[in-house]
Every structure is written in C-alpha cells, then in structure tokens.
Length: 461
Image 1: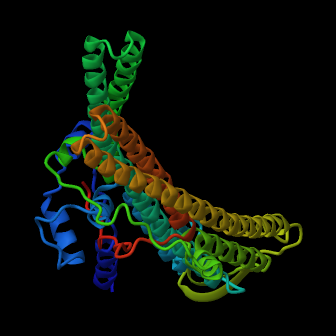
Image 2: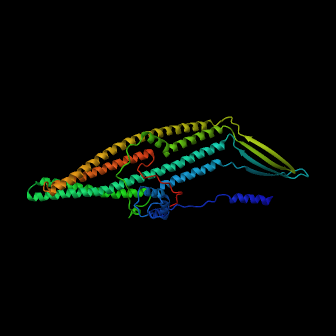
Image 3: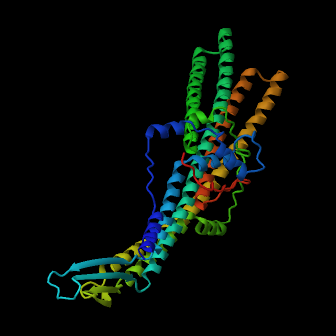
C-alpha cells in the first residue's frame, strides 16, 4: 500500500511544471535587432510559402513589405503574447478544484488499559461548485480569448496600415526628388537665357535677379526634398521592424501606384464590409459577450458551494467513518456588490460597442467622401499636366521653325515641372484618402493587393 502511495505521489510530482529562467539582456536584444536583414532564412521561407509564384529577384512591393513587418514587428509579438495569456486563462477557468487531505494523529496519555493510546483522523475535503459556475468561467474565458484573437487581427491591420503609409510617403518622396531636380534644371535654363539677354542689353537686371532668386528657392526646396527622402526611408525601416541598414540595396516598387481604384464604392456594401469585417467591432462584441458571462457567473455565486468531507478515524482501536457536509449560509451577503459591478460593466461594454459602431459608420462615410473629392482633384491635376505637356511640345515645334525663342520654351518647361509637382501632391492626398477609406473598411482596395496571412508563430528574435 505504501509503495503504491509513493508511486502516485511520484507521478504527480513528475507532471508538475518546472521553472526555466529566461533573462532579458538589453544589449543582446539590441544586437539581434541590428542584425536583422531582408535575407533572413525564416523570413524568406515565410514569403516563399505565402507567395510561391513570386520571383526572388523581383522588386519588393506592398505585400512583400507587409510580410516583412508581420515577421519582425514587435507589436504582433505583444498581441500574440496576449492571445497566449488568454488561452492559458481558458485552461485555468476549466480547472476543477482539488480535494484536500488532512491527517491528525493524537496520543492519549491516560488511555484505559487494553485500549490503544492513538487516535488518527484522516479527512478528505471535496469542494463541489454549484449553479454552473465553472461553465460560466469557461464561457467568459473563451470570449476573452476570441477578443484577444481579434486584437491580434486588428494589430496586424495596424501594422499593415503603417507599412502602407510609410511606403506611400517613401515613393512620393523619391518622385519629389526627381521632380524638384527637373524643376531646378528648368529654372536654371531660364536664368541662363536671361543672363545672356542681360549681356546683350535686352532685359533689365531686376528681371535677372528675380530669376536668380527663384532658382535659389527651387534649390532650397530640392535640398529639403532630399532630406525628406532620407527621412521616409528611415520611417519605412521602422515600420518593418528592421534597422535602416537592412534596406540598403533593396529595390522597392508599387506597380500601378499612380492608378487609383474606381471611386464608385457602393455605400451599402461599404457599410456592410466595415461593420461586419472590422476586427475592432468584432472585438467589442466579444468583450460584451465576456461581460454577459461575468454577470451570469456573479449571479451564480449567490448560491454557495458545497464541501463534502468523507473521513476516517482510528479511535483507540475502533474504526470510525464519517461524512461531513459544509455549506456557507448566505445570510449577510448574497453577492449583491459583485453582481452590481458586473451589471455596470456589461452596460459600459454595450455603450462602448454602440459608440464604436457609430464611429465606424461616420468614419466610413467621411473617408468615402474624402476619397471622391481627392480623386476629382487628382483628375484635374492630371488634366492640367497633360495640357502643359502638349503646350511644351507645341512650343518646342514653334522654336524649331523660328516662331518662338528658347525663353518661351524654358518658361513652359518651368510651368510643366511645377504642374507635375502639384500633380504629385494631389496624388499624395488621393493616396492618403484611399488609405483612410481602407482603414475605415479594414480591407485593401487596390487591385491585386490583399492582406497576407500572419506567420504560423512568432519566433523570439
């Protein structure tokens, strides 16, 4: 009997968890962060599994960069840790209370002759939950786990949103550098022509000085554009979760960047997609369901649990068996306070859901209106740019046949460069408006661009 008891105790001890230290060294984590590259084997395997038809030598597009961020970005690691904690809490909620065993030996010094001086009491206390409390705990934990899973989905969208915005700013900054260079060249050509005319006495010096001032301003703005391009590159690296050196030699592109999707987004479809597909709305619903389960649990706690206590007593040679029953009498407290708190928490969760839903509806309507206005502005800017390109070509032909001089052509080129810059700014506003509409709907709208899946697990990097 004693051997079997020791075997049972040994098996219980072997099944216990063992602590494993995982010290955190800031120096080591910084070193690992700075060692991240886009050629990381795990990253390449993840991209290859997600996009098997993608050529490894192709330029990185928005989907590729989103995969990089999904693999490296710390926000997703935080959300995964919260989900793991919620899943562990589900296990905790479903655990059955353990029975307790107590052994109380007693020795009687003046025991009567012929009787054993020992009294040994062995009692087992078995707690029994009533009113379905365990089921309500499990239901609440499952709803909170679903909320944590939706929080991970929302975190993934927010990471993708930041990558998209950073890529838009990066590409706009690269184009701005080229356009500013063209504008600087055109303005320099105008100044050169005016300086030659000044030497011939055809123009006054104030006209040349004004042109020289215009060129200085253009050069100043061009240098600012160079700095902006470097800044957007650093921001892009940060949103990917990699050091800026990881982007050295990386080719980044967005096919169809200047072509926006159709502006005719059906309002009813947009509302359905936004209200049924947004992870934050579904998260609020899961949180409300958890408060419902909490309220049910607190109501069930009005009813006391039962302690069943079978026991054995060796009383001076006599064997005695007993069964005890213990119940807490709810005379002074029927759990009114926790019930009231749970009802208030449910009311708050309901108000939060309604507020978030109303905000989502307004956000979708505003984003759609903003996008339509931005597309209209971009259309006008493209029309103006096309008109100036046609004027430049006509002026070049006129100069070739002697009907116009080169100063007229240089002036038109300055206007065309300025128009191209204005068009690029309009494209930036349109892209920003499209991004706001995507965020309102929580879904990509560019043709051929989808939200990629998360990696199966986040490695500790």
